[in-house]
Image (cartoon, rainbow over all chains, first blue to last red; front, side, top):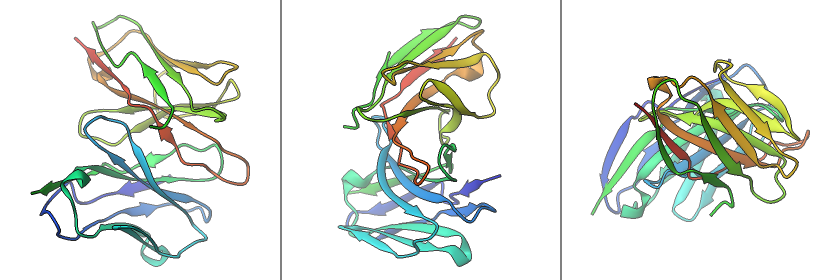
Length: 114
Length: 115
Protein backbone atom coordinates (compact mmCIF):
# COMPACT_ATOMS: atom_id res chain seq x y z
CA UNK A 1 0.00 0.00 0.00
CA UNK A 2 1.07 3.54 -0.59
CA UNK A 3 1.47 6.14 2.11
CA UNK A 4 2.36 9.83 2.24
CA UNK A 5 3.58 11.50 5.40
CA UNK A 6 3.78 15.23 6.01
CA UNK A 7 5.20 15.51 9.49
CA UNK A 8 4.71 19.26 9.80
CA UNK A 9 1.11 19.95 10.75
CA UNK A 10 1.43 23.72 10.91
CA UNK A 11 4.18 26.18 10.08
CA UNK A 12 4.23 29.92 10.70
CA UNK A 13 6.78 32.21 9.12
CA UNK A 14 7.18 35.92 8.69
CA UNK A 15 6.91 37.33 5.20
CA UNK A 16 10.11 37.07 3.12
CA UNK A 17 11.39 34.08 5.07
CA UNK A 18 12.16 30.87 3.20
CA UNK A 19 10.18 27.79 4.22
CA UNK A 20 10.46 24.10 3.36
CA UNK A 21 7.54 21.69 3.51
CA UNK A 22 8.52 18.07 3.96
CA UNK A 23 6.97 15.05 2.23
CA UNK A 24 7.97 11.43 2.69
CA UNK A 25 6.30 8.69 0.70
CA UNK A 26 6.13 4.91 0.78
CA UNK A 27 5.57 2.59 -2.15
CA UNK A 28 7.00 -0.69 -3.38
CA UNK A 29 6.33 0.18 -6.99
CA UNK A 30 9.10 1.47 -9.22
CA UNK A 31 6.80 3.62 -11.34
CA UNK A 32 4.89 6.30 -9.55
CA UNK A 33 3.99 9.97 -9.70
CA UNK A 34 4.34 12.62 -7.02
CA UNK A 35 2.38 15.83 -6.78
CA UNK A 36 2.03 18.94 -4.70
CA UNK A 37 -1.28 20.75 -4.36
CA UNK A 38 -2.18 24.01 -2.63
CA UNK A 39 -5.56 24.45 -0.94
CA UNK A 40 -6.46 28.07 -0.19
CA UNK A 41 -9.43 28.89 2.04
CA UNK A 42 -11.78 28.67 -0.95
CA UNK A 43 -11.34 24.89 -0.84
CA UNK A 44 -10.24 24.16 -4.39
CA UNK A 45 -7.00 22.23 -4.62
CA UNK A 46 -4.59 23.91 -7.01
CA UNK A 47 -2.04 21.81 -8.86
CA UNK A 48 1.57 22.94 -8.37
CA UNK A 49 3.83 20.22 -9.74
CA UNK A 50 3.99 16.64 -10.99
CA UNK A 51 7.11 14.50 -10.93
CA UNK A 52 7.44 10.90 -12.11
CA UNK A 53 9.70 8.38 -10.45
CA UNK A 54 12.18 8.32 -13.33
CA UNK A 55 12.88 12.02 -13.20
CA UNK A 56 14.90 13.02 -10.17
CA UNK A 57 15.77 16.44 -11.51
CA UNK A 58 14.96 19.18 -9.09
CA UNK A 59 12.73 21.91 -10.38
CA UNK A 60 12.44 25.62 -9.81
CA UNK A 61 9.45 27.72 -10.77
CA UNK A 62 9.73 31.31 -9.65
CA UNK A 63 9.81 31.33 -5.85
CA UNK A 64 8.93 27.62 -5.70
CA UNK A 65 11.41 24.76 -5.85
CA UNK A 66 11.14 21.03 -5.34
CA UNK A 67 13.75 18.53 -4.19
CA UNK A 68 13.05 14.92 -5.16
CA UNK A 69 15.31 12.29 -3.57
CA UNK A 70 14.47 8.66 -4.21
CA UNK A 71 17.19 7.49 -1.82
CA UNK A 72 15.25 8.99 1.09
CA UNK A 73 11.77 8.74 -0.49
CA UNK A 74 11.30 12.45 -0.07
CA UNK A 75 9.78 15.16 -2.23
CA UNK A 76 10.23 18.43 -0.38
CA UNK A 77 8.86 21.81 -1.39
CA UNK A 78 10.57 25.13 -0.70
CA UNK A 79 9.06 28.57 -0.97
CA UNK A 80 11.64 31.33 -1.18
CA UNK A 81 10.84 34.81 0.09
CA UNK A 82 7.38 33.77 1.29
CA UNK A 83 4.40 36.08 0.84
CA UNK A 84 1.11 36.40 2.67
CA UNK A 85 -0.68 34.95 -0.39
CA UNK A 86 1.25 31.71 0.13
CA UNK A 87 -0.83 31.05 3.25
CA UNK A 88 -2.74 27.84 2.57
CA UNK A 89 -2.75 24.13 3.26
CA UNK A 90 -0.28 22.23 1.11
CA UNK A 91 -0.73 18.58 0.22
CA UNK A 92 1.73 16.09 -1.15
CA UNK A 93 0.23 13.18 -3.08
CA UNK A 94 1.31 9.93 -4.70
CA UNK A 95 -0.22 7.80 -7.40
CA UNK A 96 0.90 4.73 -9.29
CA UNK A 97 0.27 3.94 -12.91
CA UNK A 98 -2.60 5.01 -15.06
CA UNK A 99 -6.04 4.78 -13.52
CA UNK A 100 -4.95 4.51 -9.93
CA UNK A 101 -6.17 6.69 -7.11
CA UNK A 102 -4.15 9.48 -5.54
CA UNK A 103 -3.00 9.02 -1.96
CA UNK A 104 -2.75 12.36 -0.18
CA UNK A 105 -0.76 13.26 2.88
CA UNK A 106 -2.49 14.95 5.82
CA UNK A 107 -1.34 18.38 4.69
CA UNK A 108 0.75 21.18 6.15
CA UNK A 109 -0.94 24.45 7.05
CA UNK A 110 1.36 27.34 6.21
CA UNK A 111 0.71 30.76 7.69
CA UNK A 112 2.77 33.64 6.39
CA UNK A 113 2.52 36.64 8.66
CA UNK A 114 3.04 40.20 7.42
CA UNK B 1 -9.95 28.23 -12.58
CA UNK B 2 -9.84 24.56 -13.45
CA UNK B 3 -13.08 24.32 -15.39
CA UNK B 4 -14.44 21.74 -12.95
CA UNK B 5 -17.73 22.82 -11.44
CA UNK B 6 -19.60 21.23 -8.57
CA UNK B 7 -23.08 21.69 -7.19
CA UNK B 8 -24.41 22.40 -4.71
CA UNK B 9 -21.65 24.26 -2.88
CA UNK B 10 -23.20 23.78 0.54
CA UNK B 11 -25.98 21.60 1.84
CA UNK B 12 -27.39 20.37 5.12
CA UNK B 13 -29.05 17.00 5.55
CA UNK B 14 -30.26 14.94 8.46
CA UNK B 15 -29.11 11.49 9.40
CA UNK B 16 -30.69 8.77 7.28
CA UNK B 17 -31.39 10.99 4.29
CA UNK B 18 -29.91 10.62 0.83
CA UNK B 19 -27.85 13.16 -1.11
CA UNK B 20 -26.73 13.62 -4.72
CA UNK B 21 -23.73 15.76 -5.59
CA UNK B 22 -22.94 16.77 -9.15
CA UNK B 23 -19.77 17.52 -11.06
CA UNK B 24 -18.98 18.81 -14.54
CA UNK B 25 -15.49 17.88 -15.58
CA UNK B 26 -13.03 19.94 -17.53
CA UNK B 27 -13.50 19.78 -21.28
CA UNK B 28 -11.52 16.96 -22.87
CA UNK B 29 -10.96 15.04 -19.64
CA UNK B 30 -11.97 11.38 -19.67
CA UNK B 31 -11.68 10.52 -15.99
CA UNK B 32 -13.57 11.74 -12.95
CA UNK B 33 -12.64 10.98 -9.36
CA UNK B 34 -14.40 11.76 -6.11
CA UNK B 35 -12.66 12.47 -2.83
CA UNK B 36 -13.93 13.03 0.69
CA UNK B 37 -12.07 15.55 2.81
CA UNK B 38 -12.93 15.62 6.48
CA UNK B 39 -12.05 18.74 8.42
CA UNK B 40 -8.30 19.06 8.97
CA UNK B 41 -7.43 16.01 6.90
CA UNK B 42 -6.21 15.18 3.43
CA UNK B 43 -8.62 14.05 0.71
CA UNK B 44 -9.57 10.37 0.78
CA UNK B 45 -10.30 8.54 -2.47
CA UNK B 46 -13.90 7.37 -2.89
CA UNK B 47 -13.99 6.14 -6.48
CA UNK B 48 -13.02 6.91 -10.03
CA UNK B 49 -14.91 6.69 -13.30
CA UNK B 50 -13.44 6.27 -16.75
CA UNK B 51 -15.76 6.34 -19.76
CA UNK B 52 -18.84 5.67 -17.62
CA UNK B 53 -17.37 2.66 -15.83
CA UNK B 54 -16.14 2.54 -12.24
CA UNK B 55 -12.37 2.22 -12.52
CA UNK B 56 -11.32 1.97 -8.91
CA UNK B 57 -12.79 2.34 -5.45
CA UNK B 58 -11.44 3.32 -2.08
CA UNK B 59 -12.43 2.04 1.33
CA UNK B 60 -15.99 3.37 1.33
CA UNK B 61 -19.19 1.36 1.90
CA UNK B 62 -21.65 0.56 -0.91
CA UNK B 63 -24.00 3.33 0.18
CA UNK B 64 -21.53 5.60 -1.64
CA UNK B 65 -22.30 5.18 -5.32
CA UNK B 66 -21.69 7.12 -8.49
CA UNK B 67 -22.39 7.61 -12.13
CA UNK B 68 -20.55 9.07 -15.07
CA UNK B 69 -22.47 10.28 -18.08
CA UNK B 70 -21.50 10.28 -21.78
CA UNK B 71 -20.41 13.91 -21.51
CA UNK B 72 -18.09 12.84 -18.65
CA UNK B 73 -20.05 14.70 -16.00
CA UNK B 74 -20.61 12.74 -12.84
CA UNK B 75 -22.77 12.26 -9.76
CA UNK B 76 -21.95 11.04 -6.28
CA UNK B 77 -24.84 9.55 -4.32
CA UNK B 78 -24.75 8.80 -0.62
CA UNK B 79 -27.60 6.88 0.99
CA UNK B 80 -28.49 6.53 4.66
CA UNK B 81 -26.39 9.50 5.68
CA UNK B 82 -24.40 9.28 8.89
CA UNK B 83 -22.95 12.07 11.00
CA UNK B 84 -19.41 11.07 9.93
CA UNK B 85 -20.33 11.77 6.30
CA UNK B 86 -20.06 15.48 7.07
CA UNK B 87 -17.15 16.62 4.92
CA UNK B 88 -16.05 18.50 1.83
CA UNK B 89 -16.65 16.34 -1.25
CA UNK B 90 -14.23 17.09 -4.03
CA UNK B 91 -14.61 16.15 -7.65
CA UNK B 92 -11.51 15.99 -9.82
CA UNK B 93 -11.15 15.43 -13.51
CA UNK B 94 -8.06 14.29 -15.35
CA UNK B 95 -6.83 13.10 -18.69
CA UNK B 96 -5.05 9.81 -18.27
CA UNK B 97 -3.59 7.48 -20.81
CA UNK B 98 -1.87 4.14 -20.44
CA UNK B 99 1.42 5.95 -20.85
CA UNK B 100 1.02 8.67 -18.31
CA UNK B 101 -0.97 9.82 -15.35
CA UNK B 102 -2.27 13.32 -15.61
CA UNK B 103 -2.69 15.65 -12.69
CA UNK B 104 -6.06 16.05 -11.04
CA UNK B 105 -8.00 19.25 -11.61
CA UNK B 106 -10.32 19.89 -8.70
CA UNK B 107 -13.58 21.71 -8.28
CA UNK B 108 -14.26 23.85 -5.23
CA UNK B 109 -16.17 21.08 -3.57
CA UNK B 110 -19.57 20.50 -2.01
CA UNK B 111 -19.63 20.94 1.73
CA UNK B 112 -22.07 18.49 3.28
CA UNK B 113 -23.23 18.82 6.86
CA UNK B 114 -25.21 15.95 8.37
CA UNK B 115 -27.22 16.76 11.49
